[in-house]
Length: 280
Ligand SMILES: [Zn+2]
Image 1 (spheres, rainbow, N blue to C red):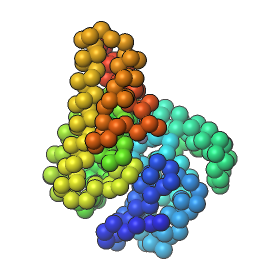
Image 2: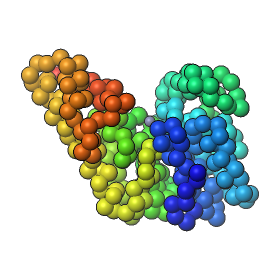
Image 3: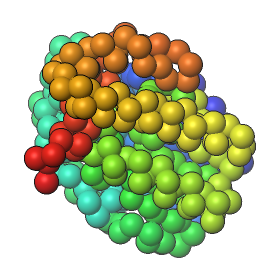
Image 4: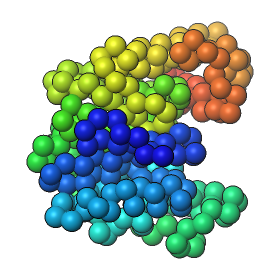
């Protein structure tokens, strides 16, 4: 089901990890974000945007290169020009393509193609802080190295940050992740952002909810840092700290969801490495 969020802004929630595909339509263009994941879901998106395509610039924006965000690309490219961050991680894209192939073959997902996803051909790459027409782009690192936040008309599409469902998943760097959140606060004020659409779970409308998203992410990150620092000081084993903290840390006042504790354990290991004296 496609939900109208406000004039010209629509989202579709996938059965895959509540992934939010976003459609922004105005007089000049159709801006499609992370159309995913299952075949019928993507076809629904395609049917929805089809009547708007004539005479508009067609753009497909990828928030980052993780597998659940890129599986829809062949349904739209090259008719839609693909946009991504200038830091786009082709190694991660290749891992993601392999993961899509594995997932699809394991769960018998129908696609118009078989085998591995073709390498993505980009029409544009955007630098951190770059603007194009009335669209502003900011890089977001920490989850991956190639996160791209898009701001248009007071709406921010942010990828895997500021989710209400998912505590911060740090794949690259804790410090980058914290810096990204800090930077986004400033950018949101500057661009008077009042609607934030993360790619997993519900969007955040209004400054109070947006602020709450920052707060729950930052609370988790602060607890993670304290946990890892104490573990290092006490000379404990990293696996022990990861396992124990997975049982006691919370996100938004709730225990960490069982199915995603492996991501918390991975966060512990990444920060452990970043805080360890030998880390360079
Ligand atoms: Zn991701």
